Length: 225
Ligand SMILES: [Zn+2]
Image 1 (cartoon, protein in one colour):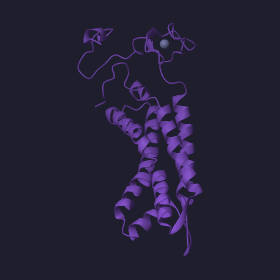
Image 2 (image 1 turned 135 degrees about the vertical axis):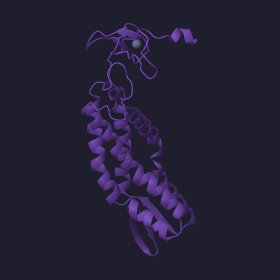
Image 3 (image 1 turned 135 degrees about the horizontal axis):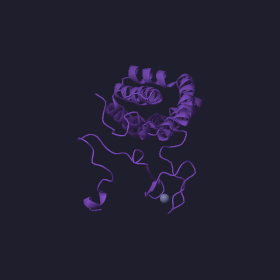
Image 4 (image 1 turned 120 degrees about the vertical axis):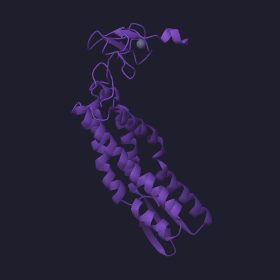
């Protein structure tokens, strides 16, 4: 698309960093086909593809809170319940995420211990805290660190797909150990809770409308000092 056709509509912003928003200009973009329409209220539909038109994701804050609270609740069993059961001639052993990390560390696989600690313990915790912070800031219509909050949201979105690492580690271990024939490893119920936390956090991140962050900045969209 040539640059000229993407020219701004509406008055030029006063200075660099400020920007017009579709909502500020009374316009709404169709999520289905990308066409832009005059905002005609709650029940408006796209004149081209028939999708419902809305300036912001409907019920974004409430839905994100719902997914986030569910994820926080399941974070407890994800860490307390065993993620894998090892059965060998020496007996049965059940490991939670944290006891597994300790086991890796003590048995000399400290690289694996660090990776699992970061990917399965720190990252999910960071994402839950980050989403809660973003939601509280939006609800308070805070202008605090708008640009950093926008970056934080992108970071939360990017890390979503890497959070299933723990499930892969258990699967990999189960395969390795069973090939060697020493023992059998089965995934425990904790892994289901852990997978649910990861999926619910991804749904929460997806439900959050990052434009709500900038609504607090007003029509100009300039970062707060
Ligand atoms: Zn459309």
